[in-house]
Amino acid sequence: MNRLQRKFEVLAKSGRKALVPFITAGDPSLEATVPVMHALVAAGADAIELGVPFSDPMADGPVIQRSSERAIARGAGLRWVLAQVQAFRERDATTPVVLMGYLNPVEILGAGAFARAAAEAGVDGALLVDLPPEEAGPTRAALNAEGLALVALAAPTTAPARLQRLAREAQGYLYYVSLAGVTGAGHLDPGEVRRRAGELAQRAVVPVLVGFGIRDAATAAALAVAADGVVVGSALVQAMAGAGGAVEAARRAGEFLAPLRAALDGAARATPAGPRSG
Image (cartoon, rainbow, N blue to C red; front, side, top):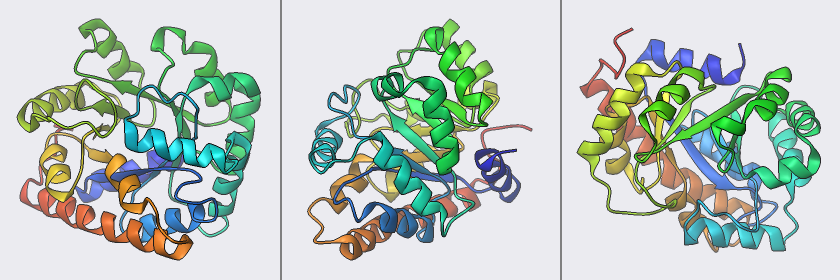
């Protein structure tokens, strides 16, 4: 059982919702990345999605696009990101870390070499936005060989047959994109998101987390009702933008996340029966 499995098992037994923040490695500064990760855990993060900066982040909105551009300009490549995970593990051996990014850097390194390096650094899984499930076999096998999960995405536009496949084959957790758009987009219909996420959670073999468009504690609590938790990214990245140093960035990260943790815990107490029957 890896860190992701252990974490979600503990959450399920305690009736709590997962809170998974996303940050772009290398932003708002190189030196802030590890302190921010620790601050997020202290504020209630159950796992961390660590964004690997990429030059063409097609699924991301302006906030994360700009953070990726800034990180690349500072020299934050894949090898550097893995070194930050290794540094994080010096103090935290239990919080799951999932690398979120795009396939190109993995292909340049090679799936096997990437999986080995990620496992050695202390990574628990990878979410590759532009890797379709129909073509994911070799990458999944390479990751699984090192004990890593290949986390998948599902969206409102996902065809029923593909949705069934994702629910059946998902690893780690299944990331349900709450709307048809890019990260940070608005115009959420909470009722519709809850309905779709709840249906998916009933079928998926792993926890279902809702992401995209979650801006604050109220949104997080509203969308987590029918799912196993939430992922928050753009609003957190925006909250840290322009921080004067690692200490300030970590402070901003913790102050942003703590109200979301409190809201999720409050929502879980109000609706103790989660989206699953078993």
